[in-house]
Length: 150
Image (cartoon, rainbow, N blue to C red; front, side, top):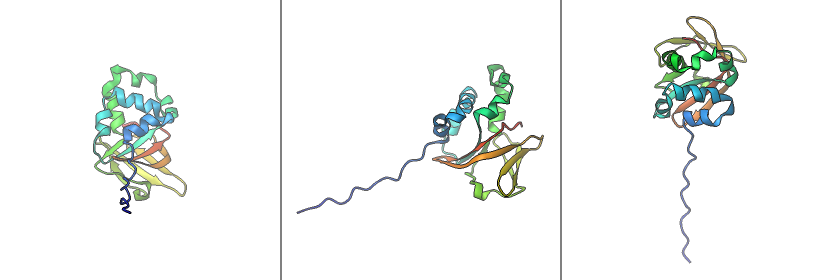
């Protein structure tokens, strides 16, 4: 009696960063913004990327005019300020005082305390990571509680 060799199983495929945004209810405003800014193809690319993804509540604190087509260049720049290209940076890789250059060329500074990771742009304001290390096929996402202003 011949037996067939066991079928090779493929490892599960991770979703792309865009798929994560689309499939996460609390990131629906980010999904709209990424679409309006024409960044869907970019964030579906090979990466690796690190995306700091503001929640719907974070976007609710921003004037709605910034999602208007008249503000498209500002919206695109703001969204690129939430993306680090060329690296998938896990929360365990972050160091207190670390500076990260974002896709728009601006820098954010990482502050780490016992129970939180905070991101601070040069011009002020801050965002705290509320959900870290959401793995994607082309990088990693960290959900944050505020929209960072470049």
